[in-house]
Length: 151
Image 1 (cartoon, one colour):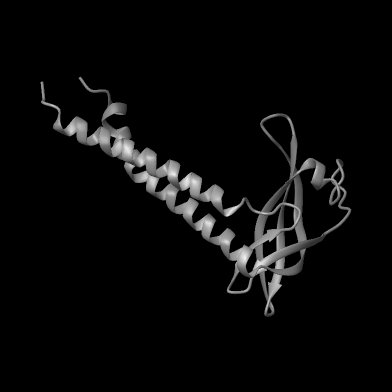
Image 2 (cartoon, one colour):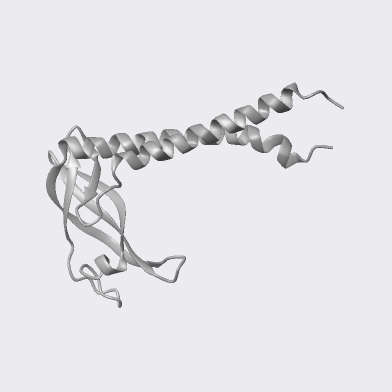
């Protein structure tokens, strides 16, 4: 008898992997957009707080707010503790709220902070290729299972 995992997991992967690849492609396109038309802007930090990481480290998590043509945009960002200490001390006292950022005027919701720029565009391409390989393997598995004679 076939286990439920062996029966349904490949079909679930066929649905999930393209979503993952789509997210990687969108991230790559946003990174390329910032590289091509990134405009410097001074933003501000709101709601900063420290959060623990898996390896007993800390990250400063916050909302960054910037303006474009009179409209405010915001995004969630985080910094490792060595970079975050210039904005907030260990006790939660805010030292600085001003952020140097870049955003894309054609899509103002896409921005990055200068202290933590996005990954290069080719990283997204590699992630997309890994997803494509996984998807091809799962489809190959499903075709092989479908063509296998039933017992």
